[in-house]
Amino acid sequence: MVVVAILAAGRGTRMKSRLPKVLHSLGGRSLVERVLESVEPLSPSRRIVIVGYQSEEVQAAMHLIPSLEFVEQTVQLGTGHAIQQLLPHLEDYTGDLLILNGDLPLIRTQTLKQMLQTHAQNQNAATILTSHLPDPTGYGRVFCNDENIVQQMVEHKDCSAAQRQNHRINAGVYCFRWPDLAKVLPHLQANNAQKEYYLTDAVTQVGQVMAVDVEDYQEILGINDRLQLATASEILQKRVKEKWMLAGVTLIDPTSITIDETVELQPDVIIEPQTHLRGNTVIQTGSHIGPGSLIENSQLAENVTVHYSVVINSTVQAGTRIGPYAHLRGQVQVGAGCRVGNFVELKNTQLGDRTNAAHLSYIGDTVVGNQVNIGAGTITANYDGVKKHRTKIGDRTKTGANSVLVAPLTLGDDVYIAAGSTVTEDVPDNSLVIARSRQVVKPAWRKKSQ
Image (tube, rainbow, N blue to C red; front, side, top):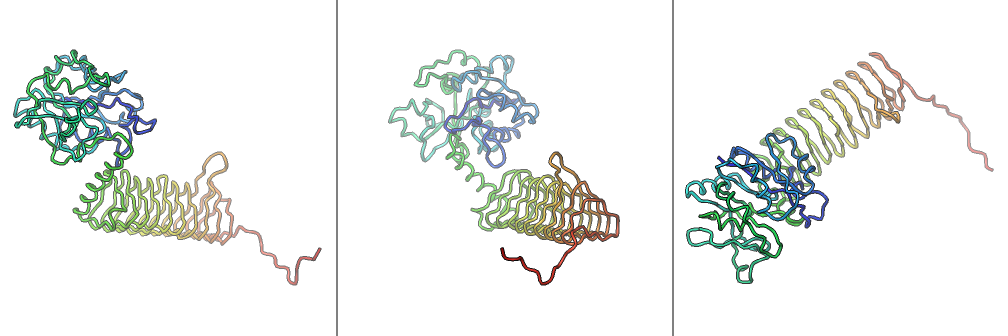
């Protein structure tokens, strides 16, 4: 039985941000959400997040995560002080406590499982995760004997010059037998340069403590500033893109492509350079995305093409072509076999199957039927200065070039709109609409000289 505690109380001043450090985003999820995801497969009996700086904002950001508990550290006096806040919440608990920092977004579940297994097999009072870093600057050092039994732990700022030559670092991940730790916590002292209560001081007081080295040191890289956040993003992107290429997705120039970990791709999808896939996006087999496109929180069916375009919060059915330079946003639904072409914007609109909007149009708050042709320059005037209005266009209707459809408006099936018309009244089925000024030609006319 294990309880998980995540330290998320710090401000993260080196981030130079009003946003709490643990809420900064990495690959579509916040740092602390990534830590929570890594521990979920361990099936902990409780998950407790220790909050402090802007605690209400941190809690609000995670309010949809079920069965999550929050404990507040009103004054941030170090990691030991943070865990002291758990004493009244774990009074009768006799199992293990797994402690992680909330800014450790690259940690893998398998690493944590190995750590817990070592802890149980050796009946340790505590087990800590360690690694040998090429550059350990800023990390606390761990000193062990030949059997990986911890002898001493020293924070970087408290290390001597000789101690800093040791590259074995503390990853900030601990597993304690809670009853042993609970006895020690009230007696921690702040005898250090920062006048803080360190959890590392408790390690050498609880009994046998063993270190477990992580195989890939990149897993335990913490995030303290924007440079480290960018480094973590590069590592995560490498993981994600390798996964999809091995699963049958073609990435042309992977270094110029970004893919959130939340994205789902099917085999035989092709992603062109300078394309970015974000959020809860799903792209099905045979689709060809990019170059130069952004797809966010959208679902694209089989054999969809998107070139130099932006698709956000939308669904696109099979065989539809998007772009170049199209923009779909605000819950757009595009049917099968459609074309949404050059400089077309769709907002909160549904297009039926085999409907085309090929050039220079804005269609907003509209329901469009099947086999409709939207002529070049067609505009739905959906806003009256106070509120939005809906337009409905029936099956097989065709709008002429440079038409303006003033909502609220309903066009029936098989309607033809003459080029240059401004339509303000509903139109029945099988009608031709001409709504423009009559052309006047005055032969042999020229402006008189002044």
